[in-house]
Length: 220
Image (cartoon, rainbow, N blue to C red; front, side):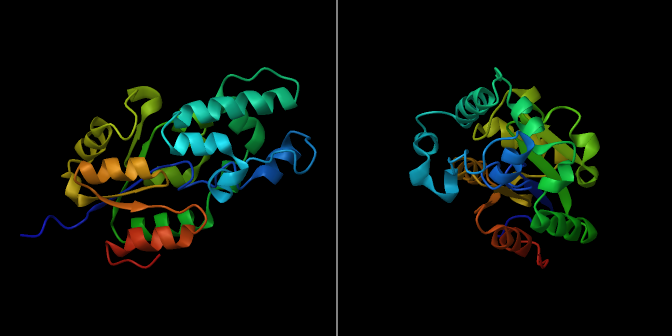
């Protein structure tokens, strides 16, 4: 017997909807008046350049621990003491959130909305990293009917309860949700929770969105 047909697209936020901080080093350096090339850590784009990223991928440290370390490092480069990831993101990305939204995300989210696919976000740190005014300044987020953010729930993916929260908010069984995340541990958590899932490659965002929308028979 086949399961329910997919009804909702559930997206991680940072990396999936927005470009990663690894991809926007040049913007960050300009915004913070740093020497071009000063930020050399490249995460998934060049793991050899980033032993700390490799430690995170090996589950030796958490994703939050990774970004706490990077936040402190970049703060020191500008002569300040930063302990809050939102300080880093807001200073690095300026006043225009739209500038860091992936164009592939914009197209896919609007295509999904127009096709009647329900939209949700399941994030470990949306407001923690971006600040609580970010949502109001990004019109695209108005298309999402629910946002589950561990900044407030304190339940981080891949905890099974995180996936249960979003399916309950949508009033859908997990099998009716297609979940997209750039961290494999979170994708594995979604599969264990009964969701369809796509492991999003930040280096090939178009492919990730094509795979996600393909579950609904919609072209990215």
